[in-house]
Image 1 (cartoon, rainbow, N blue to C red):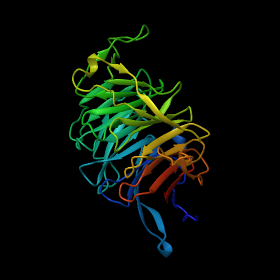
Image 2: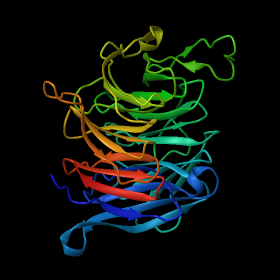
Image 3: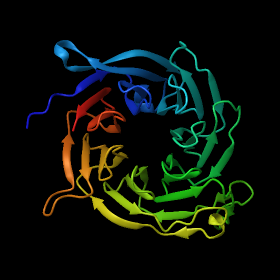
Image 4: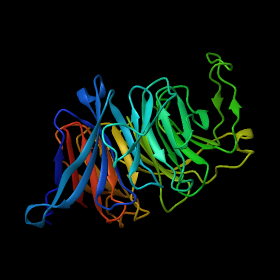
Length: 350
């Protein structure tokens, strides 16, 4: 079957770290990028539109961009205000932007002591967002407060991603350098004793409702299934995408009193040749997910292959560098975007 070529946008000099589709506008995306692959130098936040190009073929164009003093690693759109979005920066800061206002953010926060690597806006408590950092913490924020509401000492090392549950208010999941995936209930703040090398006074770990030993090496990404509560996907340096059934988790105020270790691995999706940097479930189908990898591909998988069939459905391989981010359109089923260190944003139909 001949597929139409992807719509492509190039941002020379600014390799990408992640993208986000607007929850309000079907044709609008945001793109977080960093000069020099995020190692040193400034960042740029691009606001991008998908529209008809020459001959009616879909085309991408930059509506505007914002310069930042440090590289940007993630971006999330507000669930309340159609023109606002928050960015995560290498200097430990978070910035709130309004696309109707040029040049400068409308608010900035700086509490993390290391790079902020992920940001996520709640689709239940629509006035809240969370950030995760290399400093091991996850912080809960609202746009109108000058300081964070809550800080979770989630892991002893880098927290690559933190995401709100799409089903349960006050529940988040995190993944880390330490090889674990954790579920926290924000209503049950309590601390677990740290190990012999830890220090209870400076950084006691917050008790997780459930800790999933997901990998023997770094877990770089996770996502909640949008249709099956407490089913998550994780992926990372071990090249495998793993589907976890975490329905045994106990929530509520008592969750921290009985921190559990568990999670049932339903399946493993194998095929990527290098580390998997991003995984995201489809917003339209319970059995479909996409992944982005350092092997320069973005892949689409099904968790329910036909008898004798394969989990792998599609490989998107025009990128010429690490594929760092991918994201499904929230409005058009089967439309997927991928972004890469080759400075190209691709939008294509699966």
